[in-house]
Amino acid sequence: MYLSPCKVAGIYSKVELRMSDLIREILQTTTYRRLDVEAVLDPNKHSWCSFDPEIGYLPRNIVLQDGMDFCRTTYTYELAGQRKMVNYAGQPCRINTYGDSFTQSQQVSDDESWQERLAAHIGEPIRNFGIGGHSVYTAYKRLLRMEAGECSAEYLLLTIYDEDHVRNLDASRWIRTQWNDRDRPRELAWPLHGLPWVHLRFDLSKGNFVEVPGFCQNADDLRSLCDPDHFYQTFHDDQIVRLFALENGGEARFDDLEAVAEALSIKVNLRDTDQRMAEAAKLRRMYGFKSSEYVLDSLAVWAEKNHKKLIIPLVYSEPQVINYLKGGERFDAVFVDYLERKKITWFDSLQKHKEDFADFAITPEKYIDRLYIKPAAAAVFGHYNPLGNAFFAFSMKDDLVGWLNPKPPAYHT
Image (cartoon, rainbow, N blue to C red; front, side):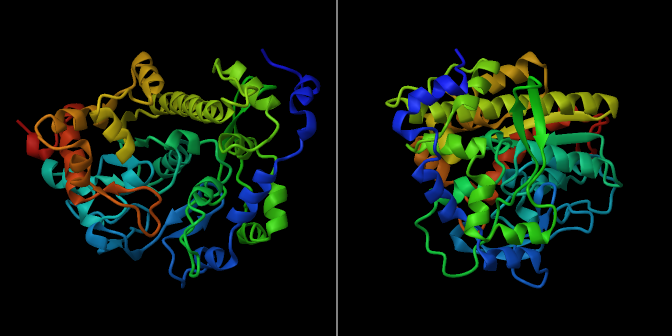
């Protein structure tokens, strides 16, 4: 049952709805640094991304020491914005891929991406518009942008990673990632990957999700967030920052969060202090799933209107794969139920890993070590190594070939 703000105030007693000390500590710790921001804004400085006022940032050419065996990897981008196409690059392209770093194929060089492995095999090019760290919603916004131009394609793959759902809600993902990684030394410039972007929130007055513009419309807006006081004033009452603080044991008001949970039929109890951290984490996760459902509902309508064919590949972090291989429940069952209910075409890499693992007599951890790289440089999470990208490509191959009409050159009858 939703309580009014007046009734909720009684729950807090001595807290009296003040923002917690933890929120202040989180925001002071994660305030953008001037040297990191200037690296993004200056095209002559070493940075893996450049500022974009709508979707936060776009990738740019760089060599990073972030690959397997801590090797250097090469990231090169075409003028239109897709990652360098190697196989069949001069031929017409009917497949575009969108998503986060698993779409981008972060931590491998251009020709080692899963798109290039698939393109080499099926005999036709595949564009890669992935951007490390992006959400389902910002990937959707990039898709709309690119499909309105000369790189438009008939077949669209929107890859969703297990954390992408909650990123839809972040006004600045940087706050969460840097707080969780706050003990790492920061002597030199640090690769930014969570600049303010367009995001989603559930509007209680309208009864639906709404788009919230990013806080930075120009470079000066971004620079202003290097001031700790301004950074604090910008984010201290942000709904997701408050929810993140509750998840980490802090205090914050949650009257609106309770109302959102009730409106979305999410059963949580934020009033029980013993359970609040776990319940806050649950709410953020389920809120994220609901926001992704909103995105895909919107995308499905757009795709039908524009005669596009859509497939949603799901990809997962090492912990999620290991948990599933050990017999654990999949954390996104409610989202999978949504895909099935809506009859959205999707690809399940989690199940493909389970089928592949059955051929091995090793531990899930050993199995994963064959396919993933540990995080480095701009990568907050570990990604597929070249072997992992090949696995992902060929586990998807039959679905992709069956989807394409006419069949790709390698499968012409």
